[in-house]
Length: 203
Length: 203
DNA sequence: GTTGATAAATAAACACTGTTCATTTAGACT
DNA sequence: AGTCTAAATGAACAGTGTTTATTTATCAAC
Image (cartoon, rainbow over all chains, first blue to last red; front, side, top):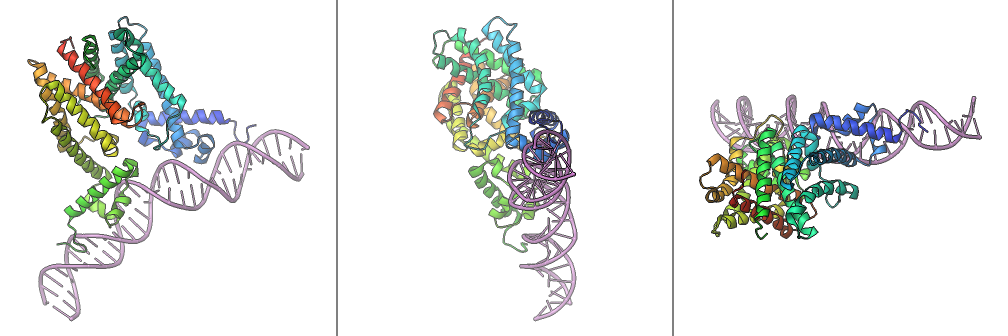
């Protein structure tokens, strides 16, 4: 089967993604290029296009892997918590922890915008939605009686908020940078928000 | 003074920024290039480098103008409100309104990352801080007795949250897109957060 | 009016980027 | 050994930001 080399298409795909991860981790999205990836795996740039449709598809797959890692981190954070509020705090801290530990990988998820009009594939959206669902699960007891849709919306609201803090902090657009300070902000957002829910204010 | 043309350096600067604004508004940051700007104003690319240090500086100036526009919008939103909570809601709505009305201009503020290690100039940071201060002013009565620093931190927390919702919505990473739906989320965040403050939960 | 200085503007180059595709080449089958 | 075929390449294309030698238009002096 294999013609010139001993690598199957799947192997080359894997090697390329792995090399891309390495490059992104070091230099961020801006430091990534098709030629650099190709060079890293000992092939020429043309080979990448036998395996990926274009560089966007490659990046989407790297992002998918990052989302998987992130999801695992968030999931792990929920195993040793009892109260909903405590769990949400734990998920928030895991989120901040991940973003500050892998800033380039994490940022690339949001820096990479698909060509306009093009929607993310279903399998990708699923990976994103999984994360929101983790928060939904915790909000459920706090919003007993509310509709499923309403709970989903509340989870989105809170989690986008946490993300916003993280995003501005990690891109140095705030004047905080260490994970500790970021967590102070996200903790504050979560605590106030959850307290607001408890206070049962009209939305 | 003027040698070949009738344009001073200042005029060329202005023309370039204006052309860049036009291009960004239409095609976003990705649609911007030095050559396109130069062509738009009837000069060649070299001329831009007599007037701007590099393309990053040009973009920073476009962003500064966007920040000015945005600040005016937020400020205008605060003139006809009475309660702090209502005012914060109004600022939030103005923020969403601006982001959805000028998505490319607004996104560019956050898409454009300076080379690492380089800090944004002081005049730029001032323009950002002004916005947070608008929120601080409204939070002040709700946090009477708290330190200035604490209030500033709370404003940051809340506003990054609002921004996060906006950012994910405008980049189609959420499943909402019309301004109406985004406002539902930001309203919810603000209402719950402010209610949480009122509930005086330990931060 | 001619000449010379000077600063504005250009054109061309450099090293990159993503992407395509004719050509080469290595392995499998007859 | 010869043929077929798919893997891999290398060169090309159009674009990017940036630099710099060269041209050119205007002003001042003669």
